[in-house]
Image 1 (cartoon, one colour):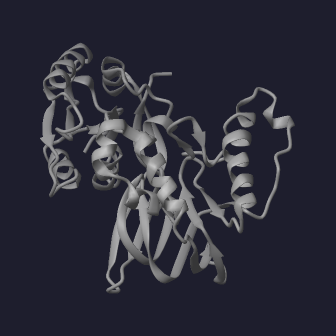
Image 2: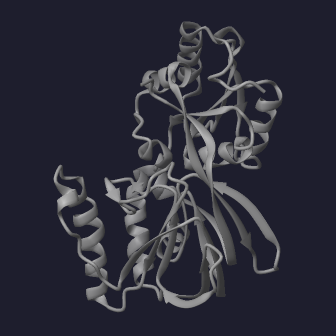
Length: 327
């Protein structure tokens, strides 16, 4: 299959994989028709996701029908599902951010609420190769499920917070619903006991509150969780949280919200030395293996993925091509 950047304009065809709950289908169809015509692309194909198919199967159908570019129109779950189905293809992924988090779009610094601009990037932008996370999750019945993620995977406070989030409240107030869930989660007993291995080295035991494996590090509300993460460096940034007291949590909050969120964004930030503490640790690796003592909630790209007793994840450098603004 020719790539979107390597074929002639006359031969290019896009497909929109959309979540009908997340977008105004009529408005998007009209805008796509205008953008494809102006860019000289063929008539776009349309595929709707469903409760049974988050996007993987319809994306495969789009590729089989010759799509050079898949436009993911939906939330983070739609983007992840589309990426999972297309990452071994030569097609490129374009984003039409329509959800609560829009995590990949944020980390690529794309516009979030500008339909025409997003479609201009899709049909007239450039290709950029980014890394992918590949993860094998072991379940309580010893079965293994395989997935792809573009932003991050985690165990601990983030996964439990997602499990505690009220779906109806999220529909009404967006990401602010996570704040209520976070309070509930912090009141629970949160401790992970596991053995881990980085890059195939001998396994070690650890007790921690949270482990997050990130391909990139920006979250909603201007939170920079992983300040040194790069989406195309061939490495994961691993975050381990190990607070032992209220003071430990205060140190973590200071690090994430003040140092990462404010200081690291200053023009002279590279000349400032950040604080170091035992409550928060960053590591750069290519692969992570974790075996848990007890089954725990796991999240991928902001969605809960049930219980896991362990997982293995590895980075695939340049594993996905995305559309970004030209130049």
